[in-house]
Image (cartoon, rainbow, N blue to C red; front, side, top):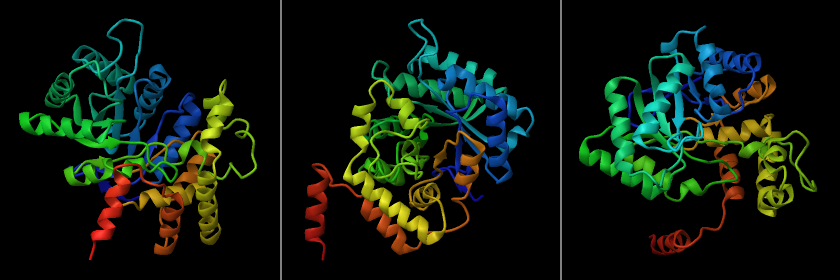
Length: 334
């Protein structure tokens, strides 16, 4: 597996990152981690709120069998971990308590990449940034990143860090895949300009890009992630995805998969791996079979025509003002 720099930092990470949100059993999770590591994977992402800390604990137990320095371990903070008023969010009090708890569960002295899981509108961003800066200076954290923020929120954070000499965000973890390309509107150009690495979550759109969904289906397949998340309000959730736009993308992915002899998952991951501003998509296999399939996205390339076909099929009409800006720019181009 190839190694890439995380943004403009000197930190090297594998071109795929292993996500651990689905970890709940040591045997299954450790097998996935072994497969990933044996394939050259070094980058693992978790969060304190995954399984209320159990994901971190499972990863920590696995790390005791490995050389810690060989891996880049990322985790996230924000989620509510208890019932007390300060058991969640991005206040100094919660972040300091949360990183100590994560270190205990991970059985390590430091976190390579510590990320804010989402924007906290109740805490001044200056408080969050100064706390993260202190954690880096203390040695408990090596780098800091963020997730699920708008372009203006990320830019403000970067500007404040630059102005005050605080440790800046060096990584963004956004939602990005062939069915969700809104990240391209502002966030990706901003990350490219500022030298921020990009590690997309849900690269397979919660299973939609794996091939298990086909035209004519009236509900998610039994046991699928979509069925789990939509349980209780399944029809409404299904309607948001059961559209001609979705099926057009899946038709294109299936066509390229047949041409290349690859699975749909591998084609969708390969498209994301080859995006110029992406550092490492985060895969989240729930089984050994899924892990092996995801790793099959490595070691080959799409042709320019195949990339163009996938990109064209997945492109959506741009909302205002992005659409009119592109129209006028194209009109003014020589």
